[in-house]
Length: 138
Length: 106
Image (cartoon, rainbow over all chains, first blue to last red; front, side, top):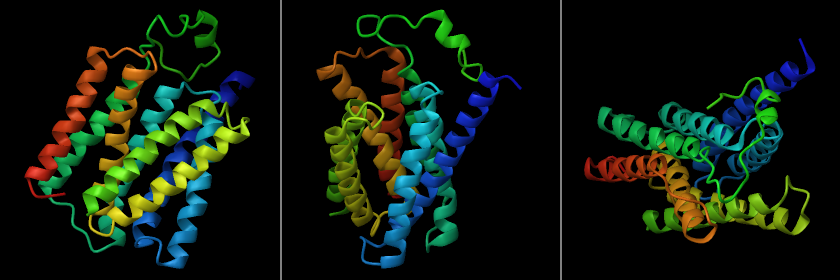
């Protein structure tokens, strides 16, 4: 595997991990009950730092908008699906449908950020794209 | 009260996004500190709101409404342009939030 491919693979692994940490963060924040439960509160802080660190590693290689979209998507879907597993919650059909609309919306929004306004940043040099074999190309 | 807590959490999450953007990969100490403090406050108020909201619902509302806020503020104050794609994302999020609320799921 070339160094570039390896970097890209590691970046995507970091991003997936960041998503998983974000799920842990969401669940722990819920479980902390307004930071009155010490264990969950500490777990939340640890996941907060882990998700931030893993995300920042991933975003060194992966385009920010794509990274945020994947990360936010994993976190939101994970929290919705696993909430009822850990807590006294139910995921009804209506709730599931509207949550899906919201989650698709936020992923869409993050991805829409890719169409950078020409005025703000110069168009990315073509080389930048080939630097990132894992990145989707427009 | 949980909607108010959520709104405060959203405001701090928007602050996180702005501060993180200025923290230059967390090399700038001042903005890194602001990022962490805003993140802590956002987390605290999210947690307060999750006393009432389901985790999945509150979390999705928080992250998506913050996303809309970041996009809108970016267009208003940071010289980023709204385009149709962003508008579709905003409409989806708002539609989803309203639907969630009207269906009694939030």
